[in-house]
Image 1: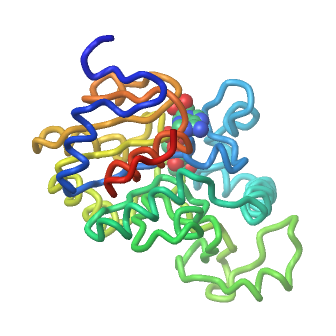
Image 2: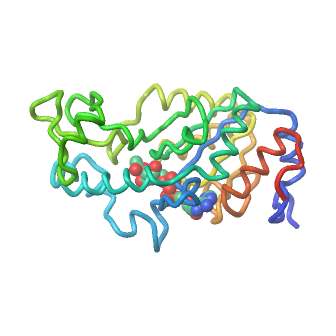
Length: 261
Ligand code: OAD
């Protein structure tokens, strides 16, 4: 077996050795981490969200300006889907790792809140959270009760601005990320000794730069993904398979227990 290439059951020895030193860790997650909870990823050719819909018409300010009702209905559908799903073993393993190693920074591109539902704290949500709704003009939060009193087929008018509409508090294509959240994520990447990347295709910047920033600052990088991506090719280890399989093994190695098979 090539160095750094693990078998399907066990973590590579040098990764286990690094985990046993309880290194500073920065984790970056993407849609793949929620796939095993039943939330479709974005770029899967058959079932991915963007396979059925055009991302620019559904997730951009221009798309919303052109057809607010379609965008609203699409996010309402996703919000309902997300409200029915549960965190999986991957989310739970990460929350447990944070308990074992309080300095662990968890950065996510996901807007589903499943890391927090599993018990993770201080999650850096690069792309916002679909459960929150804001005014399209003032960006002030709109309470859930306001939404419940309005139709689901159209974005309700904003209570904060006569020309504003309700919209999800997520980052759309062409919009800037929250500066403080991004800076905190980049600082954690720069500081860490191990960067764990799970379930992302790594095609959206600046999120995809996090493992590069970590590697440049001297950290090792481990990528978990059933497919090999740019991030996996550049990583010290690519663990081929799903996050709900590998993250519990990493959590077990971190806590020094034999862990799941
Ligand atoms: P993608 O859908 O682009 O990629 C998901 C990745 O997860 C793929 O590389 C899959 O191979 C992998 N994957 C699938 N199932 C998995 C599993 N069970 N365990 C581990 N990996 C698995 O999703 P993201 O990379 O998260 O942005 O996409 C990044 C951003 O692009 C999203 O946040 C979204 C999208 O456009 C916005 O909406 C702004």
